[in-house]
Length: 377
Image (cartoon, rainbow, N blue to C red; front, side, top):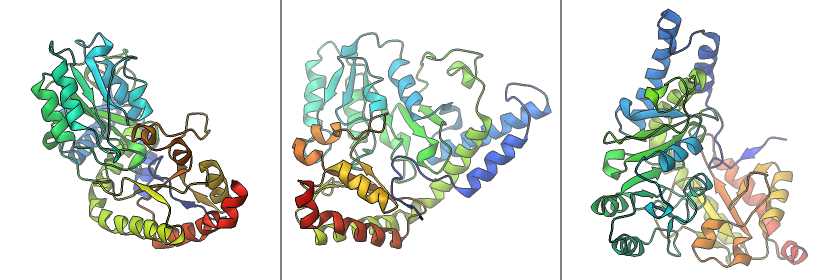
């Protein structure tokens, strides 16, 4: 059975040119910390990848620090500032990925969002204003939500944070390669990235650090990554990351066509079941992401039926064990539990074609049929 893959926000298929770059790197020998010829060649691969990742977000190569993925990059950002010693000094949005929520200290401030899934700027400003002693020193807000695709007003959040003496970390993992990113225009002091969302390998990411912000290493070792992240660099993975970043940057021009596919999907869903609720439709969002819920069609049932039809999608949220869990994002948006338990996320990417949408709609029509919902109830 041919799989129709519509879960790019979870991970994207590896691009052929990435596989080629990784294959070449795997065939070469040399530690990037060695001074001999093979070592210098490995170092050159890292430098080339660092340049490519920097170009993707309009950063300087010296600001890019490679990690094992977006999760480690987030942890380094949330735990690496020496001045942050108490939970009250950290504020994160209520819709952050678990990689941020679990990295943030327990008891930190939670910035609320509105029903549209966008950070409540007024509430955030009041939170900063109540902090008369300027205790909040670090704010973390994602650029685009992994479930709804909603793009956050990061530049305004940065302005408010900086006005109160706080640094801003931005989880850009889900946005990179889908919308143009200029870290300077965003005003973010730190930006997390991950290779596998771009069509690169899993297990590679980066933290971009601006304004000469001094972090302490949370993983110590041989002084790699200019002393910030110990451990021999994953040269093949990083080389693949660089190629994926280049390809993703070139592919931004195709995002309008991807948005048309996403809109065709949502139009088809609404035609099949007009009572379907779409999340994030009224705000700026990623061009590839659709999140919706049909009352009575529980997420688990939909996932199983679609999987049997050879279609890979995701529920609103899934825990590490693979069990479907209620989305904390939708909960933060005020969505009723019964409806949140029916959420489904479809996310498109570089291999998506119109036929994928039609295949999905054909399979979903059976799920949305009244007789199916009646049996499910």
